[in-house]
Image (cartoon, rainbow, N blue to C red; front, side):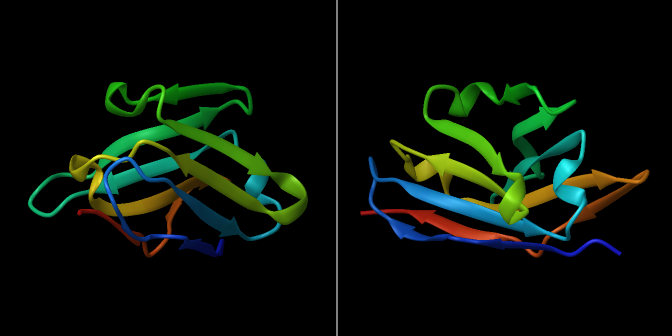
Length: 115
């Protein structure tokens, strides 16, 4: 069983920044398919950013140039740096890890962008 725990969400003004963290069980941080998704109220869950094969990173068009995914294997943690946040970025952000043929999700962390 892989544990996936997100943190770092909160309330921020438009144009502000937040950095989300996703701590995963040792080993799973080396996943070849690990990333961030989000779900706004009334919407389906959507891809934000994902790293595939440990080197190819794909970003949704609506976050390109504003969000950056990274990982620290020594800390078993995946990050999402979010800059120039917009009200439409308001959502619950989830970390997703594919490990040993199983997909694991965290419980999510709320991000609210509002003045």
